[in-house]
Length: 253
Image 1 (cartoon, rainbow, N blue to C red):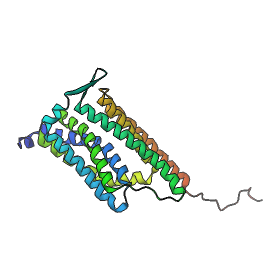
Image 2: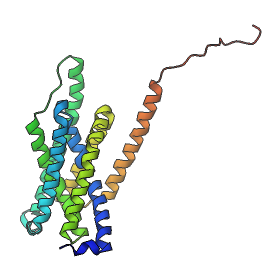
Image 3: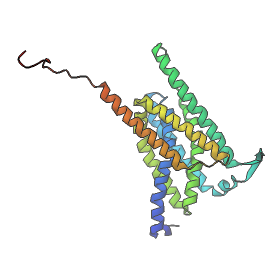
Image 4: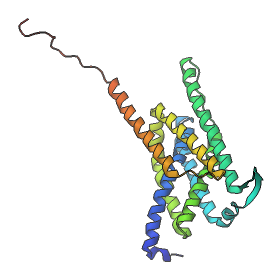
């Protein structure tokens, strides 16, 4: 069971898989951060930890039930000559859920700003409902993560360790990311737009329309970089203007 410890290839696979799991978990962190941001301040830390813990447990359970995972590729029914498997169905439903939830969050963010101006209190989500939504989306994101792990490594302990390390790093990064998103509304809207894009990709994969993830992540990184530049420019414009003490005019006047 522990023979892999003496294998350099296994350690290289562990580092590579951990890095990939962190990258694949970015959209999971963004989604959790946005949902947690709707909770009262004193509930956010616990909801964030529970949400990421659910993500880790879901991934490990799926890994340990590889036989069941393999059966998810068997066709369940056919729509317009297209065979739909269990995995396809989960991806399609998850994509639709992500599209609906992201669009709802965008609408509520816009309407929430109007409510604040009119003096009405902003809507606060219930703790249990937020955890249920996190659990649902964890299942969808876990499929992608586990499929990547199974495709890269054939040693179960390495896969489990990589997932645990990745989720632990995600737990450390989740709070700063969430606070950054809350401080900058434009970043929140950009993140929600990313999640709509991820939802479309999940729908495409469920319908056997493969979209290379590299293009998606590059688009996300590029848009995020442009928005960071915009934030810095807005900060500079907001700085107070310093007036010169000397009066303009020619010497000797």
